Image (tube, rainbow, N blue to C red; front, side, top):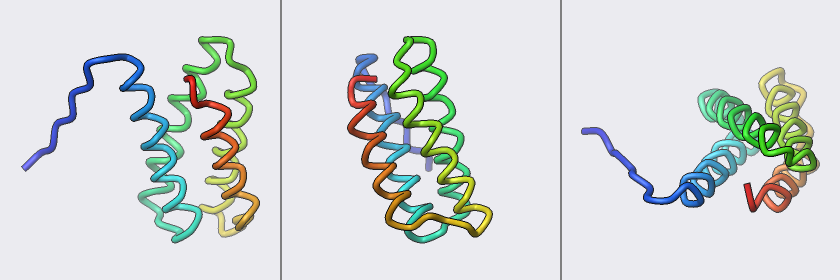
Length: 97
């Protein structure tokens, strides 16, 4: 059975994208889930490209930092609470994306 989610507005789709990154990144950074790390990295890349297209450079920078934290986690060099703080900063800083 496949679950299909259809969002009627671009704003809703963007919020869902940010929420999906947040959920996967948190699971990656807290539990070390390799599949969540992969999804978080892919989704954060999509969002940071969107931020670049919109010239939302502060948000793009926060998403790039989040990607670095996810990669460090994948390499076994996670930054713990600082990585989670970076995630929270990205969520706040990209809220309008």
